[in-house]
Image: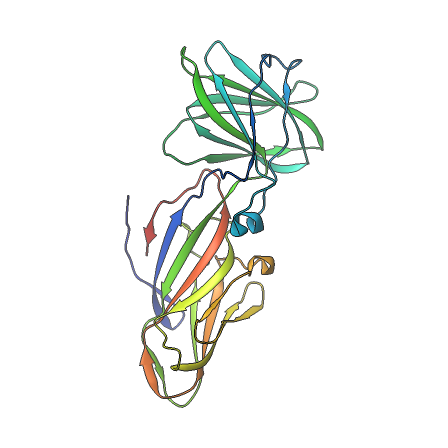
Length: 280
């Protein structure tokens, strides 16, 4: 586990951002299919479904549109799959043991190819462009003479969940509301496409303030946290990006001082970028 620490200034507030990222992996609720022989050529390719899970599904803990293929391959054993893909950016997501992959269109023209080298315990998603809707063919080939297992998804990215904690410094309530800004837009170690689904606040007593409001300035979305528990669930439909400029508004109740932290729980697409544990 690697930890990196640094401080940064966000507008008028010095904040410490700590992102604890963990992959949920391929869940038991996913649709899983095992490789079926013969599938050693384009003509005998095994038909599979494209992966089209969503951030909302992983946030709810149910992934009915996650389609996982499990198989075994070697240098002398090619496995072929046939899958219908929509035009646009798609992903081949790989896990388990190393293998080579190639993707062809229905005319037999190579669309993309690559090598998955197992470097961690988590999946890696490789993007490629699909020019038009239609069936595509995926060839998987092992890298050793011995047979080894692999895990494959083709289509949209698979998602993981993580949490980001921001320390907002010392807040002094003295006769009026207090607004605290923080900015995560330049944080390259936060995955692109991260969507917040739960917000909670710690370090604030139930009687310290008369309410807490959180604003995502990228989406012009405003969330009022539940009084006393200072949290709010079910936010994924707002599509609020984590990499955004934010504001926290503490509504005055009495003169007091506290040191709060905001916790942002989010879902993000797994690509070739994966961060195990970060602290800024």
